[in-house]
Structures are given as C-alpha cells and as structure tokens.
Length: 195
Figure 1 (spheres, rainbow, N blue to C red):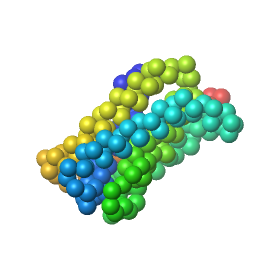
Figure 2 (cartoon, rainbow, N blue to C red; figure 1 turned 45 degrees about the vertical axis):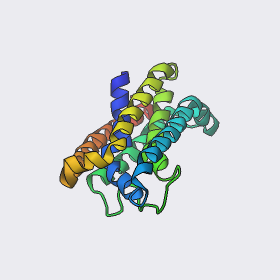
Figure 3 (tube, rainbow, N blue to C red; figure 1 turned 60 degrees about the vertical axis):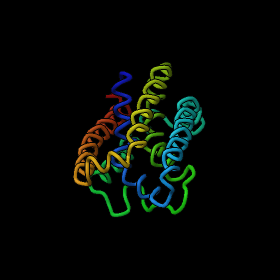
Figure 4 (tube, rainbow, N blue to C red; figure 1 turned 135 degrees about the vertical axis):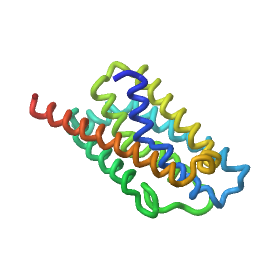
C-alpha cells in the first residue's frame, strides 16, 4: 500500500469526523481556553502510542505467536464492528459514555484516536510489510495530522456542518470502512488456506 492509501485507511479507522461530537461532549465542561490545549496534548499522547506500536508491534506479534492470517482476520472483524457502530451509532456514541471534568489520556487519546482498531491496523501493516517503517511512519503521521486538524477545529466544524452533515459523513466513512474490513478478512482467509 502507498503512504496515501495507508494514511486514508488510518483516517477512516481513527474516524475524526465521527469522534468530533464525542470530543465536544467530553470537553463541554472544560473552559474554552483549555479545550485546544487539551486536544493538542491528547493528540501527542496518541501519536506516541501509535509510534510505539509501529516499532514494537512486530515483537508483540512474535511474543504472542500471532501470524499474519490471524491478525488480518481479527483486524477485519474489529474494523467491521467499528464500521457497524459508525453506520448505526447509539446514543452514547461509538465508544460509550463520556467522562466528566478534564480528561487525561482516556477517552480522547485512547481509545478515540489510538484505539484498538487503529493499533490492530498498524500491527497488520507491520506484519505485511516489515521493512517499510519509514513509509508506515509517514502514513501514521499524516493520518494523525489530518485527524488532529479536524479535531482541533471540532467546535467550529460542528457549527458549520451541523448534526445532519456530520452524521452523513460518519455513515459514509462507516460504509467505506466496512468494505475495507471485509477485504482484510478475505485476505486473511486467503493467507490461511494458501489460496
């Protein structure tokens, strides 16, 4: 996969547009002046976690004896579940209820930005193309940057787009992610049966 296609997949998995409303809900009791600083802090925490998984992910896979087929199938299932929640969201949002007060690491950095599906996707990239860490790091940074810009301006974007447009974008991203997840699942099945 190219840097742009990898970054696009990661942006879909991170789902910054879908997470905007959750970010706004989590930060609604925080002073307006502090919101941007909190978002930037949480973005950098998430980036550190993503980079850590990029470089240590291979060792995690080897230690746990997880092969590429298992990772691809499980990654496809996780992405499909996330896609279903994006298409059919519940009242509490994709990742459940929100916290009160000023958040730290949870839920903004983890799991909203660096969630299990994003980490599983990075592990999948590492297992498929272990020597391409520069391209993978570039894709992660690009996806993180795009997500960061969207989330940093979440208050303004939510006002401009409105609830209906945000919901439509989230559903569209969910449909695309569902197709990608099925492709990942089928790829894992092919690897398992040596097709």
